[in-house]
Length: 120
Image (cartoon, one colour):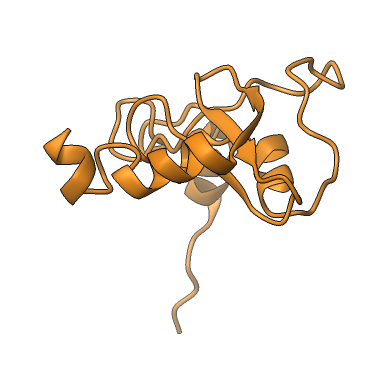
């Protein structure tokens, strides 16, 4: 409870908990467990994170709803077969993109090896 009162990075604060209790109308929950709310007039929208407070945990559909870009709430169904599931920011993990380890750049490396710089 003390962490909730004094810090915002450990989840919702006491003020957010009270605001959600008295004014929050639950809208939905995403696949990561984040809960989404809006007030009675739908002038404010917010998210209560399930674990760590990190904005990249919100998928693009819910992000559009939070920023009033979309009026309809996000659905968990994939809309198209080419869509992938949302991943949070992978920087600093073993899944982070590393051009040195990438296997897709082999053709680019072969092309660059053929090039010889001209010198007069």
